[in-house]
Image (cartoon, rainbow, N blue to C red; front, side):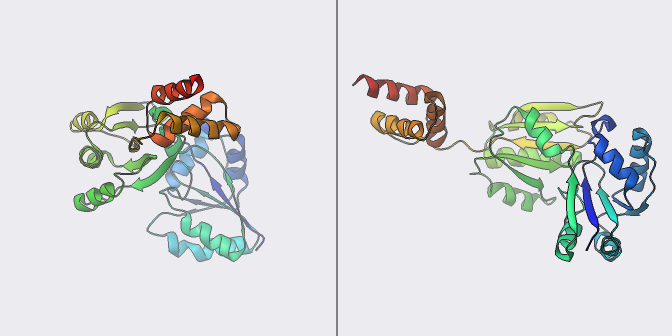
Length: 279
């Protein structure tokens, strides 16, 4: 198959976040598969792009029925641009089925990377971002949602969820019940848009705030579980630090690594290294 499927990252709110590559592909693509045609034409107007390709809808209810036609276009050597309302296609948006089908058919699959609510929310949350997991939308039914959250109670990575504004208060209350009232979190609303707002604080406080009603697109970031402190002697802690240093880490980075692994305060690890050095 000689055609090419391009996944285009659409702006979350500000058209200016789009780079020149997406403008060019929008103008040159033979077929544009889009979640909402009205949004596409509005974006094209904002970017001063003239669309020359055929525009077809590609959303959840027609996703599978559109596959044969799009695969046929790829088979004819055409370029198909897949673009959703915001962010990267297939990340809790339509696209995965087309990507898999195109790969299996032997078509080239590439992307014009762009904004993502997941990484944007992580970056502004103020929570650890060295390791994280994306959980998509939580279940709508309360029982299923609580069961999903209970299964994540011991997750140590920072967690990212999408949530609808009218379910946010209940979701935050269920998070507090599953993770603890004091677990740190951030509610990111309308990212990059005019009314952008980031609320940071303990889950129970955020649940109380959301109870008054919230509007807009919501991305929820929740801190991971703290590791249980490990009981180790000063000599054992110093040996762990020495092992990190032997692997090439600086003293500072070695201590930080041991703090992460053991869950102990930095002062405890530092004092153990100093005490062992003095003996």
